[in-house]
Length: 319
Image (cartoon, rainbow, N blue to C red; front, side, top):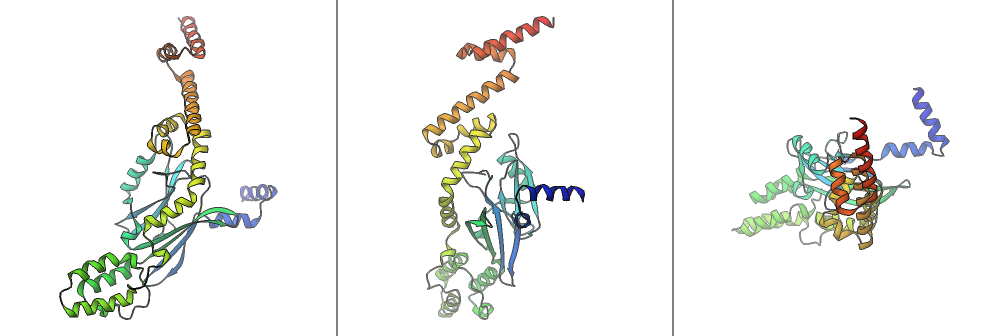
């Protein structure tokens, strides 16, 4: 209790308010907005500063667990990967991240737990991600709606060419979740009665009306968000590799096609210089005598020569 009081005192002394504490308690948590028999609506505000890219420039990925029927989103804050569950809002999975435990290690850990990268729309979910400031904190607003049960009812009606099971349903199913399935069975219809039943279902789904903006395909939606955030994301990535990344991380990054496509010529040159400096420092502190001699023969770096002479002197003194 005393530690908590000391923390609060320091926090308030630094100019932060109690409201500020409340804000941090609300971030990085999944909340249930609405839950009915046909749709479940989840919302979360995730702090987007200090997030690292996960793969191909993306700062978030969706995962799905078939066994537990769990849709989750993965983020990559400093030093770890964090998986936030939507289907089970109190569940989070943290995986450490360093030069030995990277992207593929994270995938293996999640695979063992039953999670695999997924496209929410193919599973019966709609998603929407937008850049928002939540009480002055930069965040990703993530909205997820679970239509799996409703989608299942419409699929059953379409496949059986029988609209009875959906006639009384008022909740609207986004067309993006059913249109392909509907068109497949419409093409296979052979009788007037089948076509009549499909017309009833189509009217319920409002197939003739243009799709709503939020019903766009997931790639289009995510690409639009990524486009808005591209400049800030690229700056964050460059700052990380320029100031914080280890020699191992930086060397791997510079060898990727992503680095050459994103970085300007000047940025790439500066990162290469930093990489050379980091490798030089590592060699001077950790390199063997043989490695130092090989490096000196290659570029005649006077610092290597000094270190070589120092090592030889140490060897002679220890004899």
